[in-house]
Length: 87
Image 1 (cartoon, rainbow, N blue to C red):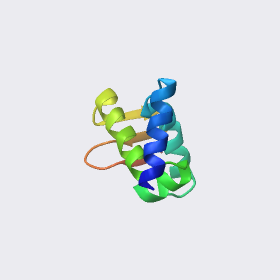
Image 2: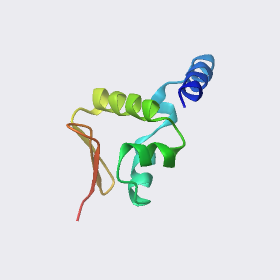
Image 3: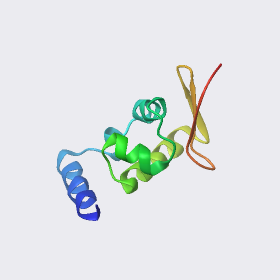
Image 4: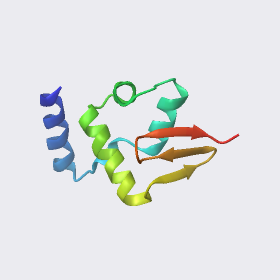
């Protein structure tokens, strides 16, 4: 898995991409809808490493703060990643 992360990082640098270009909030919501319940399952669903997912979460936290709202969902980045559907 670590070799895969290094290859992904090198490809991203080559193309001038950021981690947030790979994993988007919409992907996290799709993973939630698919029944993913932890970071490992979300990473598997999104076909990225857990390290890549963690970097994305940190980028989102830096950009949005503790949480953000997208459509009918609230995504919390602190203290842990959590997705909640508004009723």
